Length: 159
Ligand code: UDP
Image: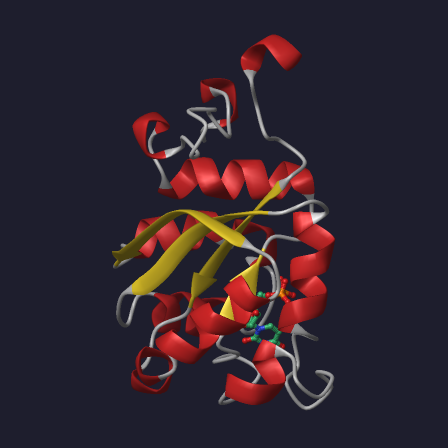
Protein backbone atom coordinates (compact mmCIF):
# COMPACT_ATOMS: atom_id res chain seq x y z
CA UNK A 1 0.00 0.00 0.00
CA UNK A 2 2.97 2.31 0.58
CA UNK A 3 3.47 2.90 -3.15
CA UNK A 4 0.00 4.41 -3.24
CA UNK A 5 1.22 7.19 -0.90
CA UNK A 6 -2.10 6.91 0.84
CA UNK A 7 -2.90 8.49 4.17
CA UNK A 8 -5.57 5.87 4.84
CA UNK A 9 -5.79 5.40 8.63
CA UNK A 10 -4.76 8.99 9.35
CA UNK A 11 -7.80 10.81 8.01
CA UNK A 12 -11.39 11.26 8.98
CA UNK A 13 -14.37 12.77 7.22
CA UNK A 14 -16.60 15.35 8.84
CA UNK A 15 -19.38 17.72 7.91
CA UNK A 16 -20.92 20.58 9.82
CA UNK A 17 -24.62 19.90 9.40
CA UNK A 18 -27.21 22.33 7.92
CA UNK A 19 -28.98 25.08 9.81
CA UNK A 20 -28.73 28.73 10.76
CA UNK A 21 -27.28 27.96 14.19
CA UNK A 22 -24.50 25.83 12.68
CA UNK A 23 -23.77 28.55 10.11
CA UNK A 24 -23.29 31.03 12.94
CA UNK A 25 -20.99 28.60 14.75
CA UNK A 26 -18.81 27.60 11.79
CA UNK A 27 -15.91 29.79 13.01
CA UNK A 28 -15.81 28.46 16.59
CA UNK A 29 -16.30 24.87 15.40
CA UNK A 30 -13.40 25.15 12.94
CA UNK A 31 -11.24 26.71 15.66
CA UNK A 32 -12.05 23.83 18.00
CA UNK A 33 -11.12 21.32 15.28
CA UNK A 34 -7.77 22.92 14.41
CA UNK A 35 -6.88 23.68 18.04
CA UNK A 36 -7.24 19.97 18.74
CA UNK A 37 -4.56 19.08 16.23
CA UNK A 38 -6.62 18.28 13.16
CA UNK A 39 -5.34 19.62 9.86
CA UNK A 40 -7.98 20.54 7.28
CA UNK A 41 -6.88 18.81 4.07
CA UNK A 42 -10.04 19.41 2.00
CA UNK A 43 -13.13 21.55 2.57
CA UNK A 44 -16.25 22.64 0.68
CA UNK A 45 -19.78 23.92 1.27
CA UNK A 46 -22.23 21.67 -0.60
CA UNK A 47 -25.95 21.02 -0.63
CA UNK A 48 -26.77 17.31 -0.74
CA UNK A 49 -29.44 16.06 -3.08
CA UNK A 50 -32.06 13.73 -1.56
CA UNK A 51 -30.57 10.68 -3.30
CA UNK A 52 -27.09 11.51 -1.97
CA UNK A 53 -28.33 11.90 1.62
CA UNK A 54 -30.28 8.63 1.30
CA UNK A 55 -27.12 6.83 0.17
CA UNK A 56 -24.91 8.49 2.79
CA UNK A 57 -27.26 7.33 5.58
CA UNK A 58 -28.42 4.09 3.89
CA UNK A 59 -27.16 2.02 6.86
CA UNK A 60 -29.89 3.75 8.92
CA UNK A 61 -32.71 3.27 6.39
CA UNK A 62 -34.64 0.94 8.74
CA UNK A 63 -34.64 3.51 11.57
CA UNK A 64 -37.78 5.51 12.35
CA UNK A 65 -35.83 8.79 12.15
CA UNK A 66 -34.33 8.07 8.67
CA UNK A 67 -36.78 10.07 6.50
CA UNK A 68 -36.64 13.10 8.80
CA UNK A 69 -32.84 12.87 8.89
CA UNK A 70 -32.64 12.86 5.07
CA UNK A 71 -35.01 15.85 4.95
CA UNK A 72 -32.89 17.74 7.48
CA UNK A 73 -29.58 16.91 5.81
CA UNK A 74 -30.88 18.27 2.48
CA UNK A 75 -32.41 21.42 4.01
CA UNK A 76 -29.28 23.51 3.42
CA UNK A 77 -25.57 23.28 2.68
CA UNK A 78 -23.15 21.22 4.77
CA UNK A 79 -19.48 22.11 5.27
CA UNK A 80 -17.69 18.91 4.25
CA UNK A 81 -14.07 18.32 5.26
CA UNK A 82 -11.30 15.76 5.22
CA UNK A 83 -9.19 16.05 8.38
CA UNK A 84 -5.73 14.63 8.96
CA UNK A 85 -4.24 13.56 12.30
CA UNK A 86 -2.79 10.41 13.87
CA UNK A 87 -5.76 8.35 15.13
CA UNK A 88 -8.03 10.80 13.32
CA UNK A 89 -11.22 8.73 13.43
CA UNK A 90 -11.22 7.88 17.13
CA UNK A 91 -9.79 11.21 18.31
CA UNK A 92 -12.42 13.09 16.31
CA UNK A 93 -15.25 10.99 17.73
CA UNK A 94 -14.00 11.98 21.20
CA UNK A 95 -13.87 15.65 20.17
CA UNK A 96 -17.45 15.68 18.83
CA UNK A 97 -18.96 13.70 21.71
CA UNK A 98 -21.97 11.40 21.98
CA UNK A 99 -24.61 11.32 19.20
CA UNK A 100 -27.13 12.50 21.81
CA UNK A 101 -25.98 15.98 22.86
CA UNK A 102 -27.57 15.57 26.32
CA UNK A 103 -25.07 12.73 26.86
CA UNK A 104 -22.11 14.46 25.19
CA UNK A 105 -19.27 15.34 27.56
CA UNK A 106 -18.75 18.95 28.52
CA UNK A 107 -16.58 20.84 26.03
CA UNK A 108 -17.27 18.49 23.12
CA UNK A 109 -18.56 20.03 19.89
CA UNK A 110 -22.00 18.43 20.22
CA UNK A 111 -22.23 19.49 23.88
CA UNK A 112 -21.41 23.07 22.93
CA UNK A 113 -23.22 23.51 19.61
CA UNK A 114 -25.97 20.88 19.07
CA UNK A 115 -29.63 21.94 18.95
CA UNK A 116 -31.13 18.44 19.30
CA UNK A 117 -30.42 14.75 18.76
CA UNK A 118 -31.09 15.21 15.03
CA UNK A 119 -29.47 18.63 14.68
CA UNK A 120 -26.36 17.58 16.57
CA UNK A 121 -24.04 20.04 14.81
CA UNK A 122 -21.52 17.73 13.18
CA UNK A 123 -20.80 14.34 11.65
CA UNK A 124 -17.69 12.25 12.23
CA UNK A 125 -16.79 8.94 10.52
CA UNK A 126 -16.96 5.92 12.81
CA UNK A 127 -14.20 3.80 11.19
CA UNK A 128 -11.19 4.14 8.88
CA UNK A 129 -13.15 2.29 6.18
CA UNK A 130 -16.08 4.67 6.43
CA UNK A 131 -13.77 7.70 6.56
CA UNK A 132 -12.31 6.61 3.21
CA UNK A 133 -15.72 5.91 1.70
CA UNK A 134 -17.26 9.13 2.95
CA UNK A 135 -14.31 11.28 1.86
CA UNK A 136 -14.54 9.66 -1.57
CA UNK A 137 -18.27 10.33 -1.65
CA UNK A 138 -17.72 14.09 -1.29
CA UNK A 139 -14.32 14.82 -2.83
CA UNK A 140 -12.96 14.00 -6.27
CA UNK A 141 -9.43 12.62 -6.69
CA UNK A 142 -7.96 16.02 -7.53
CA UNK A 143 -9.37 17.44 -4.29
CA UNK A 144 -7.68 14.78 -2.20
CA UNK A 145 -4.02 15.86 -2.08
CA UNK A 146 -2.28 17.12 1.04
CA UNK A 147 0.50 19.68 1.43
CA UNK A 148 3.16 17.11 0.47
CA UNK A 149 1.36 16.18 -2.72
CA UNK A 150 0.25 12.85 -1.25
CA UNK A 151 -3.16 11.54 -2.28
CA UNK A 152 -5.28 10.66 0.78
CA UNK A 153 -7.31 8.03 -0.94
CA UNK A 154 -7.04 5.68 -3.85
CA UNK A 155 -9.71 5.86 -6.52
CA UNK A 156 -10.80 2.33 -5.67
CA UNK A 157 -12.29 3.67 -2.43
CA UNK A 158 -14.55 6.11 -4.22
CA UNK A 159 -18.22 5.10 -4.04
N1 UDP B 1 -30.19 10.65 14.64
C1 UDP B 1 -31.51 11.03 14.87
N2 UDP B 1 -32.24 10.34 15.83
C2 UDP B 1 -31.72 9.31 16.53
C3 UDP B 1 -30.37 8.92 16.30
C4 UDP B 1 -29.65 9.60 15.35
O1 UDP B 1 -32.01 11.96 14.23
O2 UDP B 1 -32.43 8.72 17.39
C5 UDP B 1 -29.39 11.36 13.62
C6 UDP B 1 -28.29 12.24 14.22
O3 UDP B 1 -28.20 13.42 13.42
C7 UDP B 1 -27.06 11.36 14.03
C8 UDP B 1 -27.36 10.70 12.70
O4 UDP B 1 -28.77 10.42 12.77
O5 UDP B 1 -25.87 12.10 14.02
C9 UDP B 1 -26.62 9.41 12.43
O6 UDP B 1 -26.81 8.53 13.50
P1 UDP B 1 -25.63 7.61 14.06
O7 UDP B 1 -26.23 6.61 14.98
O8 UDP B 1 -24.81 7.11 12.91
O9 UDP B 1 -24.79 8.62 14.98
P2 UDP B 1 -23.40 9.40 14.75
O10 UDP B 1 -22.43 8.43 14.12
O11 UDP B 1 -23.70 10.60 13.87
O12 UDP B 1 -22.97 9.82 16.12
